[in-house]
Amino acid sequence: MKGKVLRIHPQDSVAVALIKLEAGQTITFDELTVTLSQTIPQGHKFALQDIPAHTAVIKYGFPIGNARTAISKGAHVHTHNLITRLHGELDYTYRPAIIIPPSEPCDTPSIQAFERADGSIGIRNELWIIPTVGCVNKVAAALANWGNQQIAAGAFQGVGGVYAWEHPYGCSQLGDDHARTRTILADLVRHPNAGGVLVIGLGCENNTIESFKQELGGFDPHHVCFLATQQVSDEIAEGRASLVLLANHAGKATRRAVSASRLVVGLKCGGSDGLSGITANPLVGRICDRLVGIGGSAILTEIPEMFGAEDLLLNRCVSKEVHHQLADVVNGFKQYYLDHNQVVYENPSPGNKEGGISTLEDKSLGCVQKGGTSPVQAVLAYGERVRSPGLNILSGPGNDLVSTTALAAAGAHLVLFTTGRGTPLGCPVPTLKIASNSTLAHEKSGWIDMDAGRLLEEEPSVVEKDLFSLVLDIASGKAATKNETNGYREIAIFKDGVTL
Image (cartoon, rainbow, N blue to C red; front, side, top):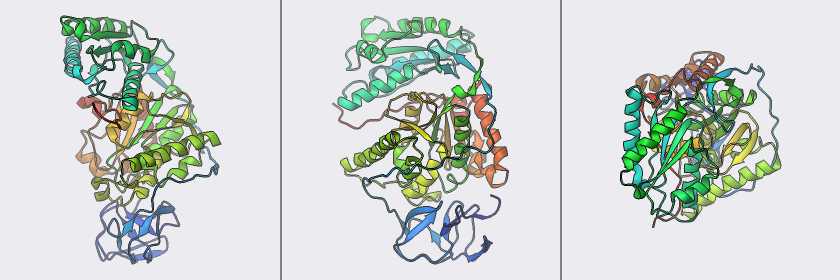
């Protein structure tokens, strides 16, 4: 990938500037000679040929939109002269793609993890405090702060941290919104990265502790404690006593060698730029394929950021049934936009555009590369947990915090999060940030865990090996992600309906 420009696919009518290119500069590559009529920022596109008005502009070998006006060879191609081709719902035909497995099968490594009583594994051994309703958020936060003080003082041996997952819901919600809140919170209670969980309620909310217990089903009383704050005189003292019991139980867990095939990894991008689909996302795709190849699980979400590239995933579904499920999820999100009188293609964001992404198709064709080339084994509803190894598609929006929370709730032990613009965000599980360009990696080293911009200078196999090794180290507790080091961890729950 070394050089100044990249034509991603032989059929592309545009190339991407890997470095800033000045107006008047003549570029020669792939038996083409192009003189630039405008300055092309890094990650942005320029025309390799004259493109007539209203015809398709090709990148990644697929249309990323239509030319608004005639675009001359060497001109900057961006939002000023490129428009989306997307519209509403579509009918999809199942055309199974030929899946070629990775040419270099790899041995299955082991990781050091915590084996839980239900047969799952965790890569962290933390105490989580989960409010059933937002009214008790600060009680939960105060208890988490006290718990971390105990760890610092040498108590709570073997516990990696105490975290309160504050949120504004659990009451004044109806229908699907209330159900989503209960489901996501119950998923977090069951998450194997938590060695113990304290569920805190108020007492008069819709999501009462008794009704939430029904949502949970069976639970281990040594692993999960409950506290209804209206029913005790001193909720802080009661909460501390519960944390002591949970810490004593969780502290008995120790790491042991297990197969890395038991890992579940979430795949996410946020603050993308024009290099995301060239460096960071394909790199994560190779990690996805590698993990799936050893029997592990990967979860890809952000359904609205598949629009325009959904066929690449639909045709990799393992059956017509899975294809139908994914098509329904894609069209369902389009209808969600239309039901709210919003245009389906209201994306990319201002930061995406500044980084070189012009249309939703442009963004989506880069985004879906995080799923590598693996077959799509299953489609999960929002709040549903992974049941099958392989690549799973999870229904959820593109919003960074909502989607990373959904990945954690679905069972992801950690999240691989690519970014071209940078973000400090973290969800309940380790959130490994992968920069698409080296400038970001160097300037925001306090946020970024891995520099995928190295792919512009180094052999892909070397960078892939480094990232996979980092994933294994983080899973084994030998390394922490920057969001963990910074203490940047929170949740957000998808909301669609009214608030009472």
